[in-house]
Amino acid sequence: MTERGRSTMRARDPEPERPDPRVPAATHGRLGVAGGTALYIAAVLGTGILVLPALAAAAAGPGAIIAVGALALISIPLAATFAALARRHPDAGGVATFARRAFGPDAARVISYWFFFGTPIGAPIAALMTARYVVAVIGGDTVSTTLIAVGLMVIPIIVTAFGVRFAASVQLVLSGALIAVLVFVLAAAAPHANPANLQPVLPHGWGGVGLAMSLYIWAFAGWEAVAGIGGEFRNPRRDIPRATALALVIVSVAYLAIQTVTVVVLGDRAATSAVPLLDLVEVATGSGGGVVVAVIAAIVVTGVFNAYLAAFSKLGAAMGRDGDLPAWFGRGVENGAVARRGLLLSAVVMALYSVVVLASGDLQPFILVHTSIAAAVYGLGVASALRLLPARSAGWWMALISCVLAAGLLVLAAWHLVFPAGVAVIALVVGVIARRTRRTATTDHA
Image (cartoon, rainbow, N blue to C red; front, top):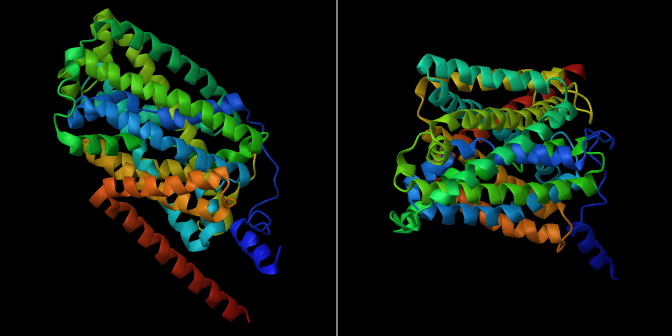
């Protein structure tokens, strides 16, 4: 091979690059395939099952089933791309580490801020979704709903403070229970299906399907979140693809089943239901099934927070290590360590968002803001993959497809991208100030 050919191959396959001195040598945690799959399921399946089937039905009618199927297909290359990145670069920084290696520190800071300071807006949304289910079952007023939502956020913070492995062990039990209860609910409700509820298929046209897809990005987001715990696996190169594949199949089947059963059983009621799973249970078993739904809601929200808080805490520590947060937050960045300072900061961010979301009570606009952040993170993350993965490898082709799909998600996000754009500007300004501060300090020292 000519020297030019060898240079081209090196440019396309950055695998032999020198390691980033800020990223510690590879010492991995003790997370296995089962625990990893449980965390992946929690991050992606999440609280979407509680409300999204109704919101999507209101937006697209039976076309919501098409929207879910399309996003399940879109998730294949997206999940494969982040799995390929995480197995090659298992680090607490997750997508920020990928962006740093591909595009430099400014891109890493932007994506860190998106994820760490933007994504937590989903926490009070998830808690409020769940609290409404609980109140619908046991009764209560607005104050009760708010108190339950706050409690649902506090408990997983305590669980995460014991470390990722402990959270994964808890989540393995919760995910198993969730799947079992969901199978029971759907099997009980399915005999009450009415095929006539599938007509008309597109009452609001393809635009309604697009809106339903935008809402469901909330449900299928999460692959980028668990990238930050890649180093917690015992064998990242082997176990991350396995956990990703298992979680992808389970999540896709679950969401497609839930949306289909909601539409064919509830019909027009699906579009106006505030608690669609509760309505399904009542159709199947009567009012006595409310306890089952309350159990589902509690399991779901605890699992989501277990997965995301583990990722938030590790990312906060990585940001402290990399200079995107004060160095004090860097403690616990090592694989297997507990990043309690990063967890503390993420809890503060969640609390600030909670004041706004819980005071409003209207979830849809906040969900769309959250999904716009997820689309932005996906876009920069899969673009990083094109730079980092070996050219024309399976992962690289998945990244190429993902770039096209991510562009489509950004189009669907539309004007809601104003929020991540604002966060990006703040991140870049912080970077400029930090560089000037370092130059001034160096000059003064000289």
